[in-house]
Length: 250
Image 1: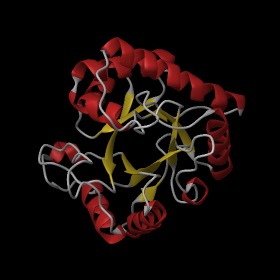
Image 2: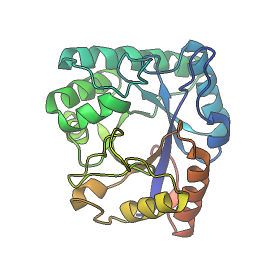
Image 3: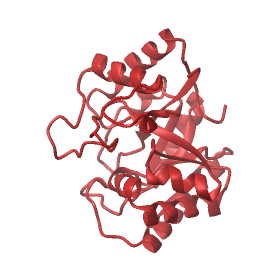
Image 4: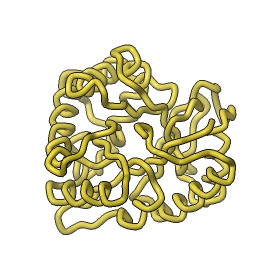
């Protein structure tokens, strides 16, 4: 592995409520997944976050989620494939408008939270999301859990896909993320997170099948209390290991 993308969920404030350390994190990441108003974000936050990305040379992605502001999009909802398609198109379109207005382009789409986890194992939902992305712009990159149904669906429809691994989450034996409701689902130590990332980026067989560690991009959750510390440590460790940190479309 000669290079890797380092992405972060951003633009997750809403109205008077401020969340995350977007300004500081921008200096250490290469791609941002910007909330599109369903699980977090609002028009003003979206516009400001797009501008911050452009000021810092960070590639921009849409981060569509379930319509669940109070649950931050992390509660599973019963949605049909058709509904998943429609909410994905709607949210990508909203962010695309702000990006276009600033004279730039979207790099990728990454579903958020429960929608991401549901699509990781549900072929019908994955196909609906992949189709939504493809119909808007077949040049967009679809981010999905490495080895998941979402990545497979994106590949089948003809999208460029990016297998994603997580710096701040633990995994179950089948390669899926440990649910946040379970103990030890989150990593809180920056050194442990960096060790996990280096192992996965180098193709290590960590807690499951090797196919889950075909990593193209590494995620740090922007709302985590240690997000900035993780980003600084992980980027430094990657670069010391001779792995360039850069956006996927560079």
